[in-house]
Length: 457
Image: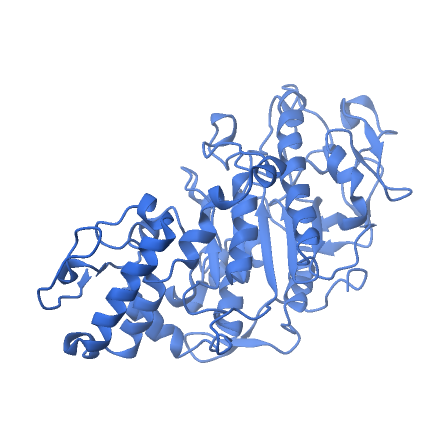
């Protein structure tokens, strides 16, 4: 715990004196304090870009939606109506606003704006691992640990692009904690270390992003907040004690005395119509199972975060490990996903952000073509699916196909890493040339497959 102590003085309007106005704790990222993290980041990351007025310049961003457990490709985007009953299930396809493309009847909102989405039906390359690692980094759990010690997409963006605004972390993970830990990986930094780990608002980091004795209710009072900061900064400038701290500590104070992150996380600032567009949902795990929540608010938080200057936001949604009750539970879950993802994408278009913010939604593998005795589908890493939008990508199309029973990719197989190569390209990172030095100083490519998907770019 780092505490700034100044001389005794008059109280602030909230009755707290200057001596105890600010305490800064470790942010819970690998046990490092905020100044230590910033010091490490300074030695590796490219400085962020700000103009003289302090406003954040335009930047590219990615919102990644992880569907824990493995969504059923045959019941979402790749229905097999000519297959036997034990393969095709009870769902029916509906037409979309793009001629020739059909998807599940329980995704009517996506169908109505299919021109703003791209579907990959021939995704492959993930092992049978119940983990978000493949979706976060392009690498599964391996001999070197989680993500085989490779950096996640968000961590690589943090390292190569740096922060947009020094008061806003470049990488934020909204994923909730789960008992099955591999589900709740928001994107590990791998060999990059804690300097490029995601900031997690529900963890200790957010608890320490508090001014001593000031509640969130007080933070929402913008006028009092700014007045308090102004007085603190005037004291900061005059304090000999303050000048004794190095520049990294002062950067930490810039983060902690800025309201940008807290305000971006506060969806109550949105108007009622926007809140209803996204839906509310719950922070509790879906169906009471050990997976993600049906928390549509997080899609709205993600949009607010990228507008505030975050480069990459990850979140998890739902419980897709449907070994049983597949056709009983998916309709309600698909309806909530349908509402949230279309609200996000339509909101990005309405706000003029569709060319700058890429959206990807996927899981760790697909489900068995054959329905089991419990009306469910089991693990099937041979084929999966992916939904993409925004980022200036070419949408209104389906890429690839599976065979008649949905068992394996047939036309245009797409590897998970091909998607990563595309996402990196859309934020200005050329994976054919970009490398990051590991602990030994050896340059490492971001992915092994380094060709973006031509149909999208």
